[in-house]
Image (tube, rainbow, N blue to C red):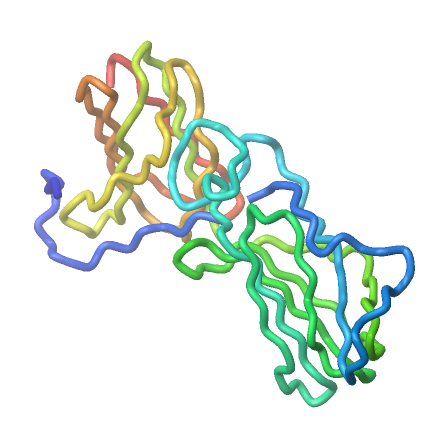
Length: 241
């Protein structure tokens, strides 16, 4: 783990958490309720609608060249939780992001049900979330709920994007808070090719230092970058850095 040259304070590093925009259809809605085995429970289906963002504005866990894999965007799991009218949890089911569909079964029939959906990273950090209220579940049927638009989490994050102005691929990016005395882990999940830009990676507002290295171990360091809420910060790695 490389040490930062100009800091001597030893403090736990605070790393930003990155947050995706992809098309995931969960539990393809059916036109009419489908027959189920005779029980006192039912099921629901819902189509998830993700926020519309530019292609290079796909938050996730680390810097990468632009792509469209579920894992690269930072969502590994979509979690569905059903509650009754008294906010008691009835059902909790998780589905892999790349599954592309899901159906929530075994929901006790009744009125006043609510649905909470969260999209999580591999380490359990919520990227998106949404809710639906006043749902009626009928026994032995699948209840189609239509579209559920998810919201970005967190809403108070800033972001960093890396622009590669060199003929070499970037293979290492380190981001740490200004009061941390080491660089921590490499945040690059995929190389950023020559003259290309990374996705946006989200961090809490604050002061950050950044170290960037290419495939031939040519590195540049920048200090005291300020990350502000909703204002993207672009850092350019160039031969003169």
